[in-house]
Length: 510
Image (cartoon, rainbow, N blue to C red; front, side, top):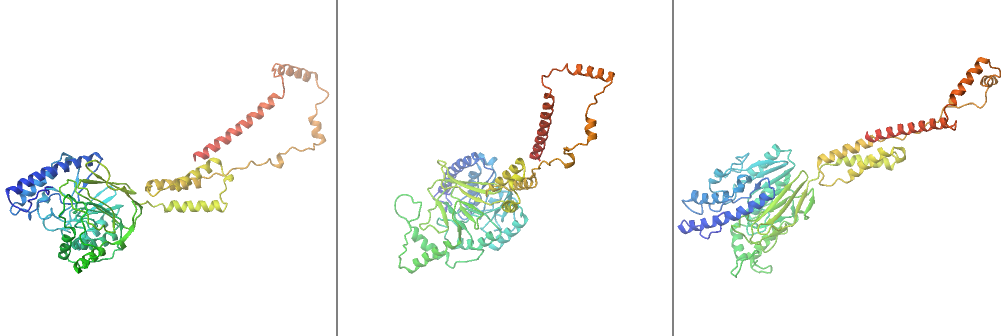
């Protein structure tokens, strides 16, 4: 905010006029960016530092006044009345205590405190732990201790994100500075040790995204000095032509014979970290490395050119002197990043998705057990009812469809259904033949036959009774005496079928 003026080092009326104009311009652009961010349904904003431009060094004797004009511009958009911002201390914030008067951060630590604007702090949102480092305090040991303690206190957080100002894996003018590279090598082993997923940075006013990187927690330092580097950098990126560049010219050529230039080029090669690349894709499941994202300017206050020699660790970079913003969406199993330019809302990079798959080892073990039973013919389809077998097959299909993005609660439910279906298989029951004692005998004793034969002699009273009964039966005119027997058989079969259907339905519901 306020950095587009050309008189930032002067304590003059011209400086303050230029600063006011710059603040008005930057504040308007910042407000437009915030509106686009809010329209996307954003929950909160993470700023990677340099909320303002002018610090005590820039205007001697006027530090409070000059910074407050810029803070006023930064805080003026109405959007900020309802959209929280988690700020990071940048090098332009660090020298003026006014920063602390405007931002009330949670869980503020004494570690990483540069004695002017406070130390490191953290907060959690959902399943994400955000650790915000004040790397203007160059005591890396304190930042390392802060990360160690914070991760231990928030062990239940599945995702871990670190934000710091310096672009330790960026791709513009600052990114190769020995001071920043040494900060990289001081902190990245700790990031890797404690399972950091993504690191968000700023400082260089140019967008870049790294490949997934891991140095296997090995510490490293460079001996090339900042003075040596600055001298060569000025020579390398000096441009006197017309128009605006977005990529530095790269004046020092690979075939140079100048020893200082050769040393400079050798240094650049040594910090490209090609050996730290673990994955290069844009959809990565359970990556072994960390993603480093460097944000460009969201207000358009100033931009830096991309370096002429793109580093090996860079997956994508962009600079067209247009404000940008990145939207990061986090679920239980995915972190998705999309970055847009504010003038036409088009994406400046491909969608990047980090997948942290849930634990499905129990499902895999249960599937393996069932498949072995199938292979060994311990489970055969014909031995089980249609409904219970279908339930098992459906549960197995669901288990096989688990993707890396399937959340843990859903995986647990799939395991439950699979276990229930396997244990709930119902065997088909074969109908038993009648027992021998129940079979009719072909031979009948003479006495039994005799008892079954009607006697020829019947009393007159018995004859009269029989005639009366015959008259009563004859009133039911069916036309076929076998019809009564037929209906009895059909009803028995029907009840039997209904009984079987109820049993099957019950087993299907089980």
